[in-house]
Length: 81
Image 1 (cartoon, rainbow, N blue to C red):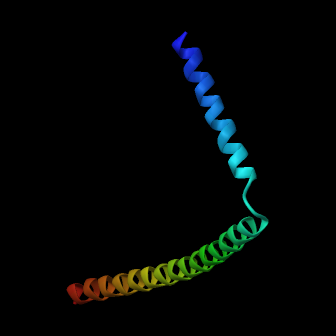
Image 2 (tube, one colour):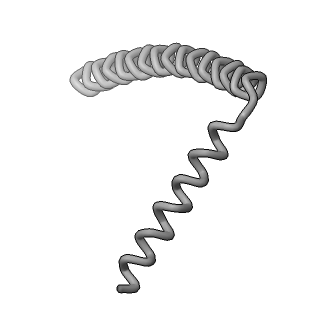
Image 3 (cartoon, rainbow, N blue to C red):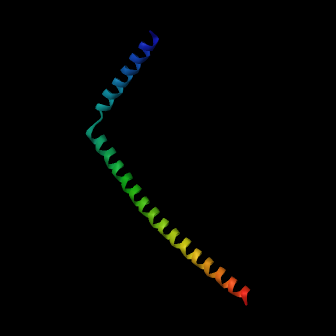
């Protein structure tokens, strides 16, 4: 019996929240949409910068690996002489 009351109370609260959310003004909805759009733009810009930084880091890693390989070859050559 208490489970039925709990479910009923939950459904009533959910219905009340839905009714309250329907009462928001068009200006508030528009404002929220603008803010969400601005945030999406910022996320896209940050994602782009992160991709550029990842590419630069990959380039640095490749350059360091090439330099290490050259240093190892030079060391091996100096050891054989």
